[in-house]
Length: 153
Image: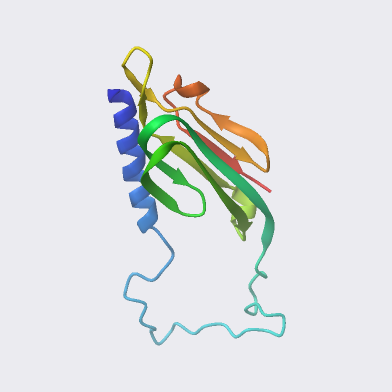
């Protein structure tokens, strides 16, 4: 259980740090004298920049098995952490855009703990399905690894 709790805390801390990261200006967003924005061309994109690119949408299904209530964290379009009733399923549509088309996007689910038949705690079983195909599982809770998968177009 200590290993599962440590893993969950580490992942939550990483998710919290990543949530705060972005490409926004850190100086409050105030425009400076040299910060001219490029003008838009007739095609709708800024002159000299690549047009916005979008990939095909992917249906992502996160599942956590077991019974009772448990904490679950999942990362799809955004980060989520909540207490849920098991078994639990969440479906999201993830569409890769711009640079994500080249590097991909990782989706993951971190299940909380559930009681085994012998009364000991273990990670709840989890799976991820992308476009109907199972792409990740934690071997019915036997693995201490989270369920994660990198979606690429």
